[in-house]
Image (cartoon, rainbow, N blue to C red; front, side, top):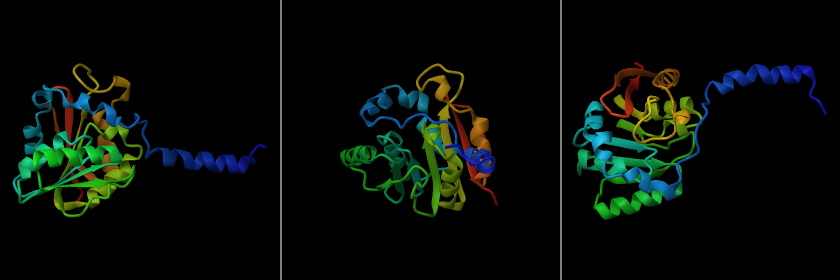
Length: 215
């Protein structure tokens, strides 16, 4: 049975506005493939110390690793913030949370808490100095809603760092068709109430966008 014309027009009128909050996204990274992210050369091209420097992450800071996967960046953040700091390792897949818990225990780190979030709610605590999102943004189905909630968890001078793969190709990372241009990330962040502080290009295969809450 066909819908009345007025109903169809009403749906079409609403759909574009709703679609603006959604981006095509790749499937969630499979937990069984975590080993792919642990290559011996990752420290060289990921440059974790330089990324943390760009976000001003220092000893005693409270930070979150959003979409933490197996916890590769989590353990580096934990070492950076030290015993007086705190790292919240967040993911939406229980298998990832289990993997992080095992890794943190193996590394003897007492300053990491895991957080099982949802696709549109990271469930982060408040008063965060920084939130790092590495290689996860293209998997987010509703980035504006998610970033708005991440921004609400920041201190007034907090920072969000989004690291993802460029469209130039080469090196590691997903296929080119699954990557997202920095301009699209910046636009969505602006709609979420964030302002761009820096677009860093020092990474070999990725870009780093640094945002802060709009004052």
